[in-house]
Amino acid sequence: MKLIRDGKIAKDEWSYETESPKLPLKKPTIVDYEVWESTKDELLKQDVQIGVKLKSDQSPDLISKDLEQIGIVVLEFPLFRDGRPFSYAVLLRSRYNYKKEIRAVGNILQDQFNFLQRCG
Image 1: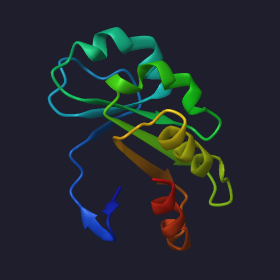
Image 2 (image 1 turned 90 degrees about the vertical axis):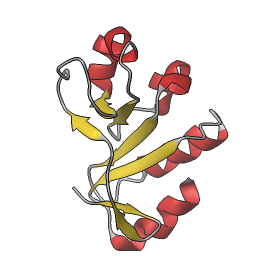
Image 3 (image 1 turned 135 degrees about the horizontal axis):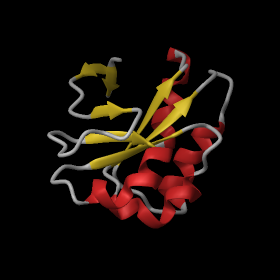
Image 4 (image 1 turned 180 degrees about the horizontal axis):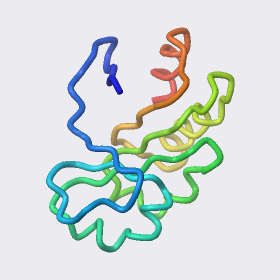
């Protein structure tokens, strides 16, 4: 998966894990919300940053109490016409004052890049 930051392909320092990762972690790691919820205590003991990926039907409200401990939030777009992740990004910035990185992954069209940047 290519990371596009500021219109350019960038190196991704984060590892993506879809299941409970093997501990100890050696680099910053992004886990699905379900993994975060079931292994949060163990993950937070690691010496690396932890990120959480939310599906489009998972509101940021689910992680609102943990945002200070989360190094990155990843919002998944299952379909280019599913706009919920745009709203979630706005919520993260405005309601929860989340200052760290928010990423979009999934089915995203190049035409949507400007909207993504506006959301934060």
